[in-house]
Image (cartoon, rainbow, N blue to C red; front, side):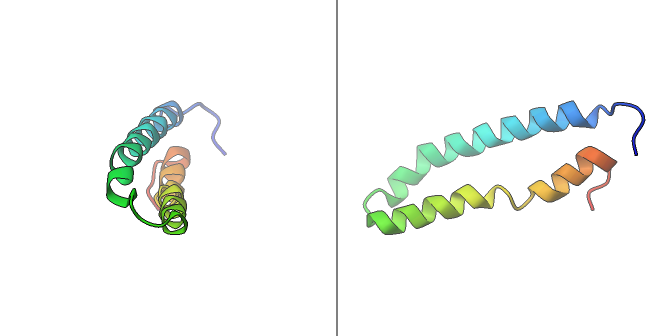
Length: 71
């Protein structure tokens, strides 16, 4: 267990927030133009998938924030 604060936690949280904002802006900017004419159910499926995709690299990122290693 860590006894001292690590610089990785605030840097990691800030980086995560910046990355999520950039990802959200990219999706909000470009997805409607690409899938705007698709049926509503298919659009919903795409947005659900895009809402889950950002979680994939999160585990390794959180491990790095806690331990300093990527795996």
